[in-house]
Length: 453
RNA sequence: GGUGGGUUGGCCGAGCGGUUAGGUAGCGGACUGCAAAUCCGCUUACAGCGGUUCAACUCCGCUACCCACCUCCA
Image (cartoon, rainbow, N blue to C red; front, top):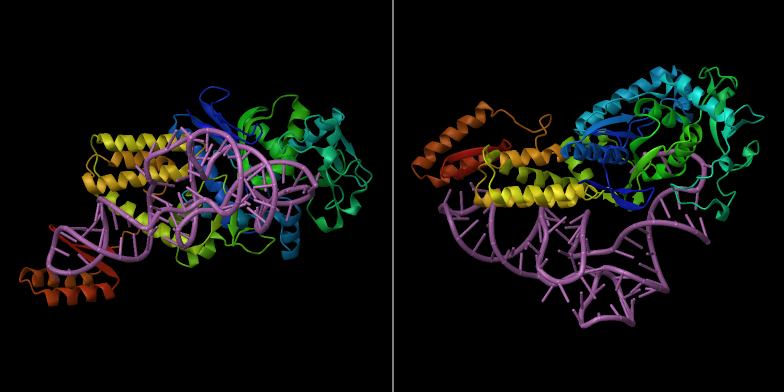
C-alpha cells in the first residue's frame, strides 16, 4: 500500500488508481527560456521517484509533462535574440532532455508543448466564457472571474476575505473586475512582436495557467489521479488550474496534489531571479557526475527544504563508491533472509510518502550485511531497490576505464616483487601506480586496481 | 497581516512518547608485510523556557531565530 501526502487535504492518503491499474500523473514542466537549474531538477527528480515508486508497487503510470514554450520570458528572449520563438525555445527543450538523461530521470509518456495546443486552450476559454465565469476586458484580454468559482482557494487554503491587498498587485490592472482575476487569454501587445494567434477575442496568446488545464485534460481526462510541482506552484498556478478545469467541466479535476519543497543555497531558495543558482552544466563542468547530483537531490525528503552544498556532492561520491564496491561482489541466486528483511524495510520506507532517506538507510544496512556476511544472492535485492533509486546501476556514467598498458606493466612488476617479498619495491611500485591515478589493493586473491576519483 | 514549514551530533539528513536511523568525517580495535577496502566499538545530538506524563527529541503553550507562498518562479 502506497501512501502519499495530499496538499489538498493536508493528510497522508493511500494512492490507488481511479481507474484500472494505471495512475495518471500530470507534472508541471519547464519554461524553456533558459537552462534549468538544479533546483528545478529537484522537482523533476522527485517526480521521477514518484513514478518509479508507483511502478515498484505494480501499478502502471501515464505521466504528462508540459513544456511551456510561450510566455513573457520566452517571448522576451526570442525577440531580444531576433529569432523565431520556436527556434529560441528549441535550444532549451533539447538541453532539458539531455539533462534529464544525465540525471537518469525516466521519460514521461507525453511531453506536450503549449504552442502545439493553442486550439485546445481557445476551446477551453470559450467554454468558460459560455458558462459566464470569464469575461473580456477593455484591453482585449480575457480573465477568469474568481468570484464565480466557489471553491477558489481550496488548494492553497487561502481565505480571500482576509488578505492584505495591493501589495504586489500592479496598479495597471484596473481593467480586471477583481484583483484576483487571472488572465486566460492575453491580448497582443507591441512587445509580443511576431508572436500571436488569432482567437475569438482577437490576436493574442494564452495566459500562464490555461495550458496545464487544457493539456492535462486532453491527455489524462477531465478527472485524473495525481498532479505535482514545486511548492511555489501551489498558488496561484495550481489553484487556477483547478478553477479553470472544474468551472468548465463541473467535475473534480485532480484527486491528489503533491508538492516538492525548494532547494536552497545558503539557506535561501535557489532561483533564477535571485541569481543564486547552479545549472546541471555548471556542476558537470566542476567534475561532479549526474549520478552524484541525483544522489544528493533524492537523498532528502521531498517535502523538506534541502540546502545545496558541495560537501554533499563529495559525501555522495564516497557513499556511491561504497555501494559500488559491495554490488561488485553481489551475485544472483536466492536472497538471504536478512537481505529480504532490508528490502521490506526499503519498501515500507518508499511507500511511506516517499521516505527516501529511510530507504537509503535500508540500502546501507544491506551493504553492511553483505560486506560482513557475504554478498551471495543479494544482487536481485540491489536491482529491486534500484528500480526506485536509479542510482546504483547507472550505466551511462559509471567509470569503467580500461587499464593503460603502462599501469599494467607496473602491476606485473609489482606481482613479481611481491612473490619474492620485496616489500620496498612493492611499495615503490604502488606509489608509482598511484601517481598515474590508480589505487592498488592487495587481497588473498592478489592485486586489484581501482581508478581514483 | 494571513498561511504553511523548519531549528537534530563536525557536516548532511531520518525518526518516534520508553528500544542503534543512515551517509560522511573523527577516534580506537580486528584484518594486512605496510596500505587500501571491509568489519567491530566509541565520541552519550535533538534552539530556549515552561507544562502534560511513570517516561518527551517526539504532545501542549510561550519565546527566539530561519525559510517559503499571498498573482514571475520547480
